[in-house]
Length: 115
Length: 112
Image (spheres, each protein chain N blue to C red):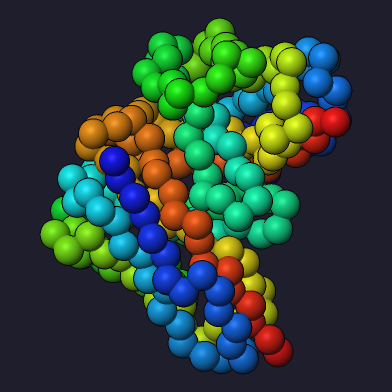
């Protein structure tokens, strides 16, 4: 039990599908993050939310659409993805982002395969 | 833009050896630096967090040091065990941004 729960753990979708990844944290944190992990590459930061406000969008294509309805939940909506978007998508949370970033806690990830 | 380099990329050792994993970063203006381990196909587990004002942190057989001015951190693993086999990642938290930036990691294999 990591305190950060991601669903689904595995997802296979076609390029025309629409799906969503969900992340929930039970740690009372105020910052949540989406990272992408592709083979042979470092983790890539996608989005940061601090107190429900998006504070960073790391030039992510619009086919990825984040949503943060409250400090405990974070979604990544997916539509018209490409095969190169296949990766492990990791959600994380921390007390805050920026100057008061403390320890970062990760979920187990959602393994996405785009056919 | 912060760049993080971890050396070596891979390491294989027999059980019982003491190890040093290296991490360097280009922008020394950081709030803290965190070390993680990742098992294959899994998420990341936090190992140690060093604040920018600290020189080192210890947890069990793990000791991490930070030399912020030279942009370096090391993770020392004492008396390695097969269960230590994993990928180890370091990630500084930049003052210029809002999130941690990661290196590619060091993949460690400890044989019994």
